[in-house]
Image 1 (cartoon, rainbow, N blue to C red):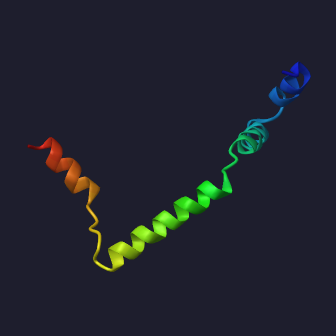
Image 2 (cartoon, helix red, strand yellow):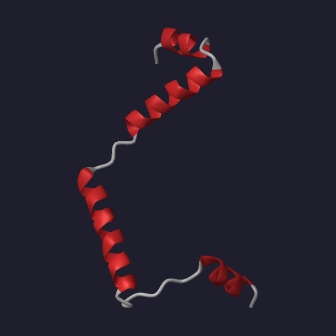
Length: 70
């Protein structure tokens, strides 16, 4: 790691450091376009199934409470 870069970053005010850190982290969060497209298609398929009555939605809070209140 470049100590000079680190030292310069530490002299930034907190807001500048936050922005700098977010920029660095976002450079690591590359999402494969094929995977992204597959997930988007999956969401649309599930939405269509619900709208056609082919799938049922469950309320998480109701399910959670039922599981732990029995």
